[in-house]
Length: 375
Ligand SMILES: Nc1ncnc2c1ncn2[C@@H]1O[C@H](COP(=O)(O)OP(=O)(O)OP(=O)(O)O)[C@@H](O)[C@H]1O
Ligand SMILES: [Mg+2]
Image 1: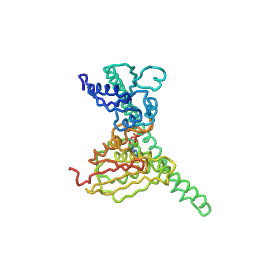
Image 2 (image 1 turned 90 degrees about the vertical axis):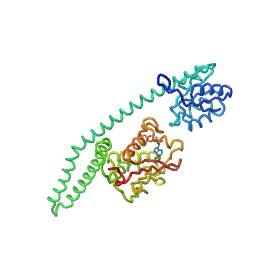
Image 3 (image 1 turned 180 degrees about the vertical axis):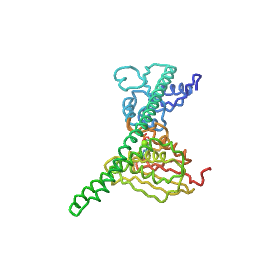
Image 4 (image 1 turned 135 degrees about the horizontal axis):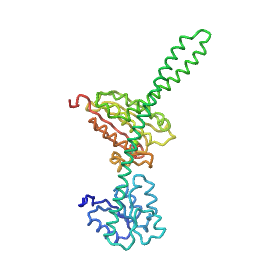
């Protein structure tokens, strides 16, 4: 940190084919407290960007293999690196140079101080923008949760009398049945039963929404996890059908100390991620498998495994960071796993992942048995 509290050491990727310029810039940046990785052409630069996750890229335009423009096109197609800011070093500010659409241009010739200042300015602006987006996103989510809870509440009132009246109508139908009208009565009973089934399903959904949007107001109690797990499975069942077979293997559910709403939220997040990892269209060739049993310590172990796209090794730890998402803007907030992780930790458990890129991922929840909880 400097005196004004700004972090000084940035992670910088320097992509420049001119060896003398590259070495001079690297030296100057390292001298200013930055961590620098270099690449001598665009293709190598892209590869290092995926592994090194720099705060900023300093990019030359005219390079062998992949030039600056091609580098930017490829970068923007990969959600994990698309937003990293880029400072372009260029000899001119012609429309062609500007077409690379960088965060900032530094004209050659320049001195090291100019570049160091440019980098600071760009990274600070990028961080301010990201913070603003984060706050806005969190507020939006909180508002959505309140809206969902309010909606569920409003639906529940009329739904209650729909359920009561339909059940009542079923009973009345029995009392007015005679030998002559038996056929019609049976028909009406079957229609009423279908309506009753539908109303019960709506009731299950509103119950789930209410518990997911208010996960923390029930405290920690002994829980049989089968209930919230099955509720979450029901909620995603429709989306799963288009993509995979859903299989469950439930051995036993040792009781754990937890919160039903929180658990429901975790299961829903993990199942939704599993669904989103598998493209629509080949349900016969794909599987989402949910396994519940006892782990070696006598606690509960739940695995949610999918045969989806998998997670590249270098991202496997980052996926638990808040706001980390590889999904296109508007499709993922990147909060699902970080929230799930903190919920499970608050129950004294762990949430881990193993993944085989291209073949699938397995998320594993472990919760300690009741007897091992401090009293
Ligand atoms: N089962 C999975 N298969 C492949 N990648 C996954 C899986 N689960 C999570 N990921 C990766 O982890 C990232 C973070 O997941 P997380 O659930 O936190 O956020 P998200 O799904 O992107 O957005 P949100 O859950 O907030 O809508 C995802 O964008 C994806 O790259
Ligand atoms: Mg998610």
